[in-house]
Length: 319
Length: 319
Image (cartoon, rainbow over all chains, first blue to last red; front, side):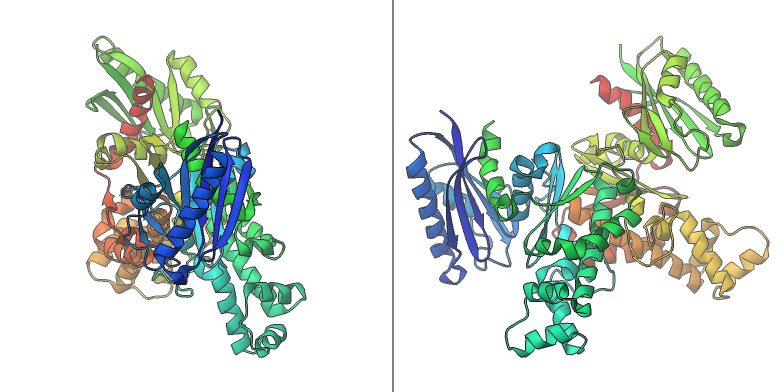
């Protein structure tokens, strides 16, 4: 009887659940909306229901290896608790893994969402070709995950891979973490919107001013469109994104000398705009990169990387 | 019969050779000067003679596990060749490991000197208490070595740990590697001397101007003395050193979440001057550091760290 696992990717707005077999084939998936405002217990109930539905459907034909959850925020790995999660208020210090194991009656694995994405990409994405990779998730924030010799590198407290908080510009914009000039403060969707609003305030971008005049809040997608239409201020924003990513990647290449660095998340869709300045910075700032063999790519699995990684947690533990 | 190994630490000016047993006890050591100007073959002869003298003296009472060499520069790990070494001109692409094995008739291990120092500190220094650490060697340049789960992390091409080339200040001083604002360009002895000469040129440091007027070249030791005597420009130089080290360490803590970060090399002797600004930067820039458990220390083994690491290469391979 073949093995399968259920992966759950808990986002701030989306809840993805899928049954995936040991060959990496998705047997069935359920996409839901995370109703964070309905409260922790309601979200948990929804997660549990979706998992149980998938289990009931597939447990007759295959053996369930366990259930993996990719969760935004810092996790106490040993205790199976969320240390903090900006997107899941009220989950702090809640014994999440134990409660899920109790409700589901099976083994549960908890992992930071960016770590899960890194593992998923290693398992079924571009990472199949390599032993290790670094993942940068470029969304509302910037997350990081490090896979070395096929396994997530957790570090001392499970806090390794906080790559969104590499300092790029020591006196740069303030970051939510308390630092200034973090990668996250220069290359996240939030940073793009902040720079766009600054351009509007400075009247330096006709396209963004027109968008703002419409009354809708500016999004990174609007900035992307403006840049594609040639608006110089919008183009400059993506140059800054590429510059910041290039410095971070050069640091990571110099430190890890891994064969692959993967970008995913909403901002990675703007690759055509930020990749040229990004790659120029990496080339300039890393002789390890210049020595060859390093690939910098967009995730093959995209939004599903975390789902695959979550499912792979029990599958790889069972090996 | 107990095991022993011979470790060789090849510096640009010093050649340290020692017979060390499997318990980490130095049986005998030989300190020589590296006569780089005499040419590669002369240095090799001297190394081989010292190793043979130690072997002849100790091989009757213990089993020789092999000979380890810590060498400055980039090494092709598989081929056992130096890729490049600023301190050893003419050694480039020389089949160093094969030649040494041929001359010595025993197994030879080659390692980058900063990697060897990291491994030595892990084996017999402060690192005995932990599973992994990062080493920063602060000398003429800034080297780095990463030990994860007790082993040197080499990366794809054996070029991992090039931590002296983390970008601290994107538009900062030019580094020998082609980048600007590298850690090495801000926190090496060379950087300290450059900043001191700039202070002399700007007439901003009475103490350093007096030293320069004596006709001798300014050294980092002279800058340290001037700072200790209260010279503001000299003190500012060590503040910059601490600031740069703090940003680099915050990046490393955020990425690796290791329990220990070790500084060694000549500049680390100025700890009392640079540590306060350094620790303030790490605290400010890394919430992983603020979560606790991270130690930042000066090497316990000091200049011997590389020697211990070189000897540990054959000893740990024999296990």
